[in-house]
Length: 106
Image (cartoon, rainbow, N blue to C red; front, side, top):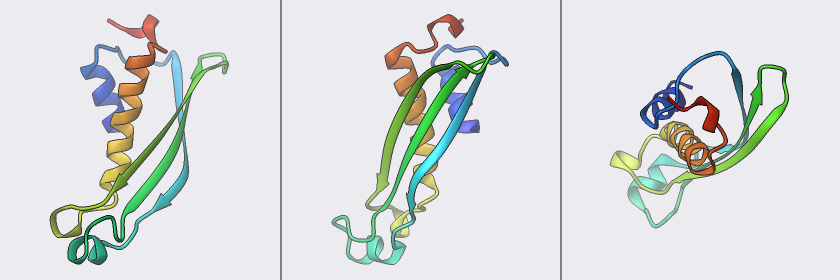
């Protein structure tokens, strides 16, 4: 959540309590760090699929964003938890591109 908040702020959105953002992690597979390190080429990849739902104060659904992220390689096989942070940044970028929260920009 901290990554999402920071990225949204960087994109010009203001923080407040007018919206609720819910995450539903639909897929999370840590993969195999050793395979990523020693074999590479996608072997042992970590992956996640997250459905983000944005609701207004009264609970009305404003929009949904589905993101997929994976980790195929990294320093010593990479840290699979990093894909969650990458997905949060992707959600912020998709919110900005879609202009879902145009009324919340500074």
